[in-house]
Amino acid sequence: MTEVLEPIPNGRRNFLTLLTTGAITGATLGALYPVVNYFIPPNKGGGSGGVFARSRDGKEILASKLLADEPAGTRVISQGLTVNSGTATYIVIDDDKKIANFGLNAVCPHLGCVVPWDGGIGKFKCPCHGSTYDKDGGLVRGPSPRPLALTKAAVKDDKIEFSPWTEKDFRKTDLYSDPNPWWT
Ligand code: FES
Image (cartoon, rainbow, N blue to C red; front, top):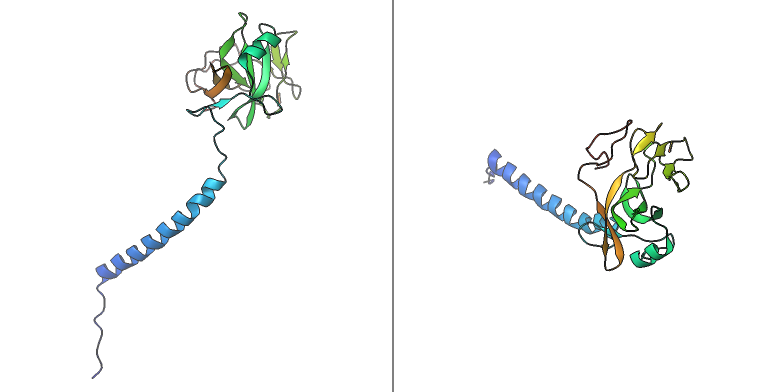
């Protein structure tokens, strides 16, 4: 006599399918994790989401040397945090010859040119389409629709640490005065 197999009840079948799918998904995710991780660039140090400012040749900038070499009120470009798709960040040396608690991302919010500092007029002027920013990166002339992005800056063991600026934007000009940071 042929043995007739009992059909698996629907509920049990669904449960078995779920178990198998779960196991396969788990194994796939487990295998993918190190691959995905491999492509995420490592944090370059500084802790708490911060990075230390570096010169063009990749060396860490020392605050004491910078202050000895540069005049009060200037802005010095460095490699900093990636904000607005670029790492070029100005260190702000204030009028009292101290390093300010904010840095300025140098990428023009119009179409992405790096904006040079013009010490003669005390402003940032974009060579691409003429957007102009005051000494704190506030927008004073378009076509850029926004000011330069801010980062926090702090001196630690003579190095300059940049970290994300998520607080209100303190700059106000006739063209732009929204206190919410547009770059977060
Ligand atoms: S990219 Fe700076 S004004 Fe256009």
